[in-house]
Amino acid sequence: MLTLTDSASAKVAQLLKEENDAALALRVAVRPGGCSGFSYEMFFDAETDAEVDQVATYGGAVRVVIDATSAQLLTGATLDYKDGLQQTGFSIDNPNAQRTCGCGQSFS
Image (cartoon, one colour):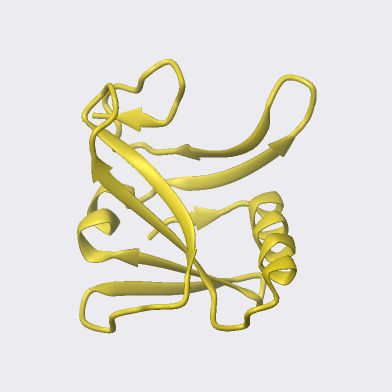
């Protein structure tokens, strides 16, 4: 399953608090597309399917949901958040990616 750094967990917790909906979880998925073959997708979702989704909790407040197909491609990956002059936003470090594009949003 995907790992969240402390900074990613804190940022997601902040964003979830702003949404003011306790049913929401962060859904992380891998979809076909992008310039390298697959692209990452992240959004808040209140729907989960116990038959296909894996759910993990980070920092006691952040639930992350990943479907079974995406979980295979995200095993060992880490979601991080940076807020600085050179880089701001979420990034995924995925050891399963053999190649990534320049924008860092797609991989193969």
